[in-house]
Image (cartoon, rainbow, N blue to C red; front, side, top):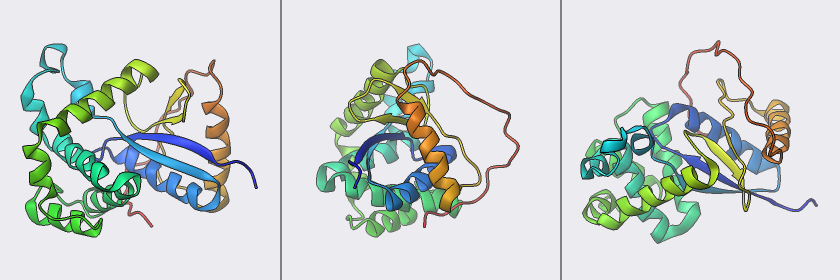
Length: 208
């Protein structure tokens, strides 16, 4: 059996493109020896004007609030709980088009991940959760020159790749072939960009 590949996957739960890529990477992990570590990247923070990046009001916007909840969930249950909670949030927001900041939806997502419904309020009351999200985002910017999500990086590497941006999400052999290409690109320090015009609308997608 081939040695397992360790992959860091940076995401913002608000991003529909990262959501689709996360569905694809879970399909790959089910077929290949791939260990995915979920890491946080806050788009609201990254995209804020320079004079706003340190503004405490950013810590309570919807995207950051959800990431703070994920950060606290990770402290309590590790990477597996992050995976479950990301699935719950993604299915609610991107699959069901629900507002995952609403208390009832928030509680349902937390409970689906085996977490107490009070975790969101607990995360908002703990300033260190905002500091954690900020630090993890800044680390990706500094180390990988990350600018968006999804960003994928082989564990221990300084070469990160934005993407793949996919819609619809491939499965079966198509998904595996795409992974082989992406894995090759992740090992190439001289590869900077490949792009083509999007031809599909972002469609509804639930995780398997």
